[in-house]
Image (cartoon, rainbow, N blue to C red; front, side, top):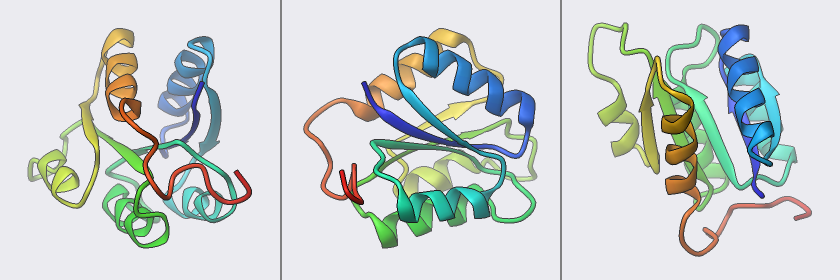
Length: 131
């Protein structure tokens, strides 16, 4: 299965997503902030990054930009509750997110979105460093 970094400043969402993905057989690395997620991104082999958009220290759009700079082929799934002033998920998609997910979501929606992002041949830039 896949090695997935999940980034969300809401501990309850982070734990829920990690639990669902873990039960589905994925290896999950959790980060409770964009900055922590970016540090993990630089040092861990990954197949997918799931990031919340609205976070206080470093938002998900910046996480997507960092992924595109550091590991251009690594897939990103952006999620948001759309509580902001603007519809932000289309912006995440335009910045290079492979998929988007609106919170709240059902378990099946999360798993379907992850499967869709992971489909196809391995993206160059995924599963680095040290693979």
